[in-house]
Image (cartoon, rainbow over all chains, first blue to last red; front, side, top):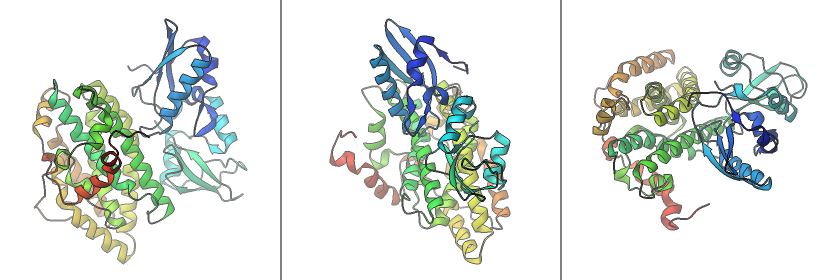
Length: 166
Length: 251
């Protein structure tokens, strides 16, 4: 229950990597770190996924998409939603962070810097358009549960910031 | 039902989040500004997410093909055991913030203890929720200070909201029979032990917000026994409308 290790059979990795987060289509669910285990038992795949935020409406869709992708690859599957250990933004892979940035969503800072930008008005988040850190918080909450809204004061670009969740 | 106390105990936690989530959801498209509108509805979504985890667990315990949706949508008013605080209406933004703040401080303290529960499912839900609730608490504390220590008008409204809702705070620390049973099994949280830390924290923030701590010692109660204020019925008729009109409908 307490392990943070993923247990995913290597043959399944390329299949699962093709499934993307429905709200952030450039990001594979594997790079998001929501797949915690995937094992084949009697030609049936058992997959455990964990939600980013409790209320994330994407989880049901992610479950269905995984089933569909596995079906295409010839596997029946069973999806289980697990809560422990709780998801953290540390599980987003470096490739996932890059995909977020390329898509226009600033990747999460470390916990301390995150607090500074969200509570103390510090300018540390890098604009996804021009790279300046002359950016300010517009709203602590954003278009989805995992994001806050920022604006760049150099290029004026509004953008999302993926909040750090520890 | 085999484990009725646990079932009731879970509803005692979850109903608070459901009803508060519904109240906040009412602000969708009606918040005082775009940012606060999005914030309140984001918090609502977090609470609904937490509620699903609790009700799914409760449905499993209840057996009998019960589902999370039955529990949320098909009970009668007297069967909801949320505290009176969370069902209070969005009278104005000061009330919305005061209600949120008075609940968030409790919710955070409560979940910090529930994390240590011997029940692994409850402990997992608590760990997950705590991350979200600490963010809610930041938001409501921030706004409480901003409005309390703001203009003469915002201060007056914020004080009025705190005074108006204060009478519902004591009930948070009342123990039900299910509470007692679950505490003795190491599953539940002894809420009576949270009271001191709660009022300490709340009073410190009120002072920082240059607001007066209400002195009234008379408190309302009843929600945990299913005896609600007149506001809950209206809320439930909104919440349950679709299921009552089209029984068993699914999206």
